[in-house]
Image (cartoon, rainbow, N blue to C red; front, side, top):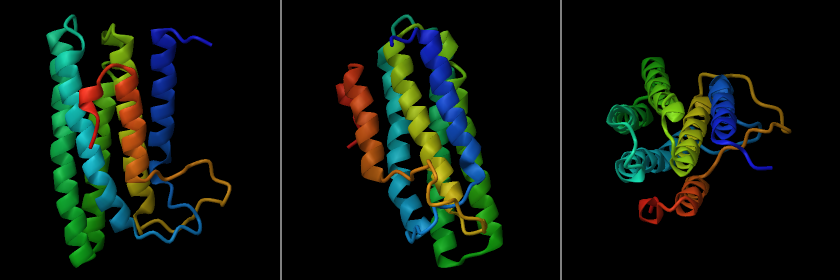
Length: 193
């Protein structure tokens, strides 16, 4: 079935909204991975996604309204900056765990999620289906990883059932998925290394 740009945008938004909705859910039952290790491994990949969003928007659509391009770039740069702050908070937490730092980590993740949501909000202003597809994948992956980090925070005491449909992606899987859509849409030079 071929989706129109509007249907694709709606589908992508639904997917990203779904990812955002499970932000408060905890880690998958039986998962023994240390949440700090997962977060530290995934953060550089999300920084890479934010950086590539800026680069792709800069080259992707010469007809793109400069104000839309600016809004997307501002949101992506804010996300990148927030991710640097988040890494410091997680490193500090690893050294000296506290409820205060956990609260700051959660607030930082939620702020970064909002930055990626701000990018999604611009989809209706973009005519290039390839650009929308690439940004949708970038946003979906970023929101999924950020949701996973929130889900792994130790403050949560409830575990997901073993049959949960939510899978926590590895940094390698995130890169692979982003790079696949970037290549498919002609942004070969914008792959995450």
